[in-house]
Amino acid sequence: MQPTLLAIDTATEVCSVALARGERIIERAEPVGQKHSERILPMVDALLREADMQLSDCDAIAFGAGPGAFTGLRIACGVAQGLAFGARKPVVAIGNLAALALAAYSAERIAGRVLATIDARMQEAYWAVYSVDGGTLNEAAAPALVAAAGLAELCRRHAPDLVAGNALRSFPEVMAELDCTTAPDARASAASIAVLAAIEFARGRAVAPELAAPIYVRDRVALTVDERRAAAALAGR
Image 1 (cartoon, one colour):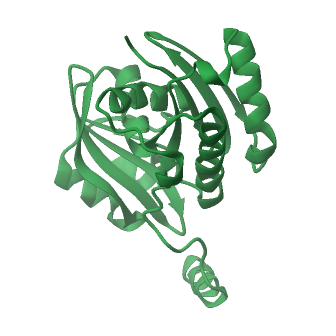
Image 2 (tube, one colour):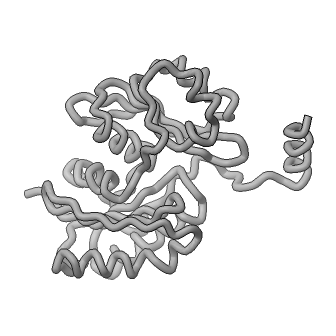
Image 3 (cartoon, rainbow, N blue to C red):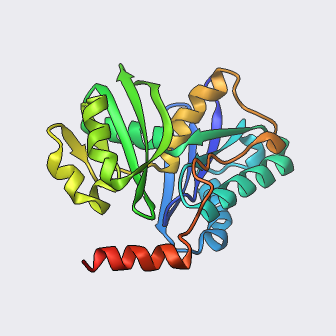
């Protein structure tokens, strides 16, 4: 029996929720800006009503654990924990870069190596590499942080068949140097998180709600005043 999973993602400006029941996945997504905390629970309620289900019908609650916006990751983790506690269900944390890689692969159907990368602000990007074979995703390089100036060299070193994520839009000079397929508009969503969560759940990797945690990768969320001034001065040269 394939599990029934509720998945949520608030790592970007798009808030999304998905319900996976075997092969069938239904999803709701809204661009909400900074209003994730206001919209996520109403979206979950609407999705469950659409599916004519109760939260107790789910086997587990999954969430996009990051990397991504710090506040968004905390919201996703906290909401997943709260729902799971209330329903007495386990939690499955899924990396957003893995979900991005899966979404890009599903759209492009290019097997091989996928380098997923998203804008981390502060002229940096989050990245990870996954190998895809027959739809199975395997981590080849763990999520990490790189300066935007070093992203193109990173891509050359790992020689991906596909590079996906909004860092390509944020740093167009990187995309100009690549000779592989690119998917700058691909994004992780609750639907791709649900697909990966079903696999992890079947492998016994769901955890108690209190053990769930975001994947931050970076422990700084902003430049200091002096760093912002220095960056502005450098940009004005």
